[in-house]
Every structure is written in C-alpha cells, then in structure tokens.
Length: 219
Image (cartoon, rainbow, N blue to C red; front, side, top):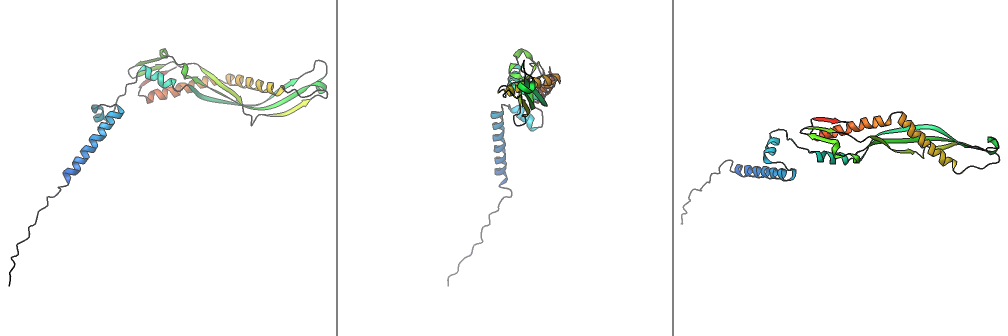
C-alpha cells in the first residue's frame, strides 16, 4: 500500500491597505491635471491657483481699453419706457362752406410708447479714466431712441364728414404723426431723459463693480 506524504499548505500573508498607495497616486494625478487645466484655460499662475485653493482673493487687473470695449459693447442701452394714452383730433376746414357741409374731422384714440437711453457706442477713450482699482466714466447724453404708436390699441374713435365732402385719405396719417409728436413732447416734459440718464449711470456702475473696481464714478 502506497503512503502519500502530506505537506502542510503554505499560507501567504496579505499586507493590510496594500491598495492605498494606488488610490493616493490617482488622487494626486487628478489634482495635478485639474491644476494644469485651470492654469492653461483661465490664465492664472500657479501662485494664484494656490491662493484660490486656500480661499484667498484673486486680483484681476482691468485696463482702460478693456473698460471702453466692455461699455461700448452695450451699444444702445435702453433704460426707460414711457407710455401715453390720449385722444388726438385732426380736421379739414373749408374756407367758404361751414364744417357740417364741407368739413372733415377725425378723433383718434392713441396708445404710444417712447423709449429712451444712452448710445454707449458714442463713448470715447477720453471719457474713461482708470487708476488702479478706481475708474471714472463720462457717459454720452441720454436721448429718445424711438417713439411709436401701438396699432393694436390705436383706433379711429369717430369721423365726421360734411354733406358735400369726402373723407381726406391723408388725414389719419397726419393725425398719427401729430400723435407721435405729442408723445415725444409729453415724454420730454415728464423728464424721460433725466430718468434714462440716472438708470444708465446705475447700470454702468454695477457693471464696473462686477469687473473688480472698488471706487466707481459715473456721470
């Protein structure tokens, strides 16, 4: 009978946390990749990157040409809208016959809007002064950009034509032109340009502060 000699089995000991160096190496590689990407695409140096990671502030320098370019890019900055509702009258008189025989009278119910703001494309480099974290900007004057009538709300309320006359085909157009003139005058009388200027100055001030300027003056 054959006898088999049984040798004791070898047991290999597994070192605890043998996987830890691999994970740490992966984390370091990932952080390095992120840091390089930020440095390459955001234009920040490694010292600035370290400051960001530690919670420090990053100072971004904005020069005068950049400020001029940013403001000019807004072009026609609309800052206020003015609306008017009124009845405008237009009529044709006959120098010989009375109104009920040869006249033509039209009443137009008008709803109009005037829009005002500042045309920032007119800003000149000499209007902007930058010194460190301070900036001063002189804006172009406010102006009315458009005056228009809302055709869905502007309608002929009544029209009276004399017994011996026919409606004048140009009368309604002339009344509409007069309505736009009155709309513009009413907007100016109510201070639309002053409001437009104040709103534009506030908008530009907010933009300049967002660029990092601590001291901002806009007039």
